[in-house]
Length: 617
Image (cartoon, rainbow, N blue to C red):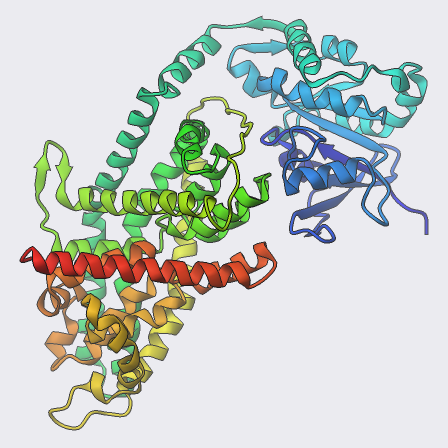
């Protein structure tokens, strides 16, 4: 069988390669991993104007062929044809961001110097023109000596011209007598040439770029930049309580009404208890915090899509260098605020293996969204809803403090790790700053819907399953008259061993029960507590109460504070451990992660409890 001709999309990160790939290949795509590495391999089938099929590869974003990360190593090996059994692509389609032309031209020149057939896709020209930058593709083509096709992938503009250019690329390269005699420049020479080529391709420019420069001067200022960043984070966590509380109260009232209706209309028995004390009470106690999670992610999505998130990484580079990391680690750590799993997977872009390993080991310390229900229920139960200053609520201040504690814990852990088990020097990093733009409302709403769906899906699967299993273990065997149902149940007997260990740090029997199913996902701790108190309630009215009144009645403030301290550090998520095992190719480092994080959780929960008791709280 005749081998298909192949082409590869290659370029810097954030140049629009994936959008072009989707337009060119449609649904005819395959996703796998490259042999021997965990980097994703995307290929698809496209059709040339002649009717000939062509295999197209979407290569990971790279800044140079001198590979400094697993992603860049894959790109280099594909471009040079170094993967066993795979020939190098016949055509390289170099994708350039028209609004960041000078930066992208540095890598483009290195690829053109190889002498392979090349087509330039000058992508996102609409965004460049929107920002007041009009380019001349013909002038750019003459400077580079290869075909240049302006494209707008998301609007399918220039696609037919690009397909035609790809089909003719080999013929054009053969006709170019200078193609194999291109000078090989050093990196400084490429940068100077890129600057000159970019200037020569500009037809007109507006003052908008000067506005962006002034914004960067303020937001990237070595002193003002960090203050603005932390001020913004402070506002976010104030909003998580202030804005979301009315909606959370509404959901809570609805769940309480459903429980009351079920108890009033269903006959007493095991099925009614499962529905009310297990499913509605357990799952509902987590779902009630959906508004807080949506509020948090609304801010994160706006920061990402406005272009500010990349600047936050730049700001954090100096701070992270103090603990042996670079700004390249900031994006994975920031992703871990949503979930440690994509955060750990994002470390693939980190070049230095010690840097990458350190980032993986500290990523679970970043406060993921699964911790938010745990924090929110304890704060709501034990921290008064009062103002401590103009526009500053005490509950939001405590939540901000917990997030800061996670960040400080991650940085301190990184500092110790980089001086012991992952010893090494901090590496620098190159990061492209995206253009400023108003976040498209549709994209923000879509992102919020996806996050809400993920959360609700977890509530309907992991949390639902854990809650039902825990309810069964709590409900059987049935307690004798006058005996506590928790003490008589299978779950109570299972938790007795753990309670001996955690009792010195102030944890009660109910917390001991909740910690075990919470290994499936952190937010299960809330549903587990709600189910435990509902099963052990003396009567229907007590069972129908919300979780917060029961916590206030059964916990002391030192216990509540110790519980919060535990969840700042504890790695209670089996999926995170599984991903860490895959990314480190073994169990050595995930087991190390479990030991040191549980050790930190135990020590700091104990210190918090003992100090709170000593202070008379």
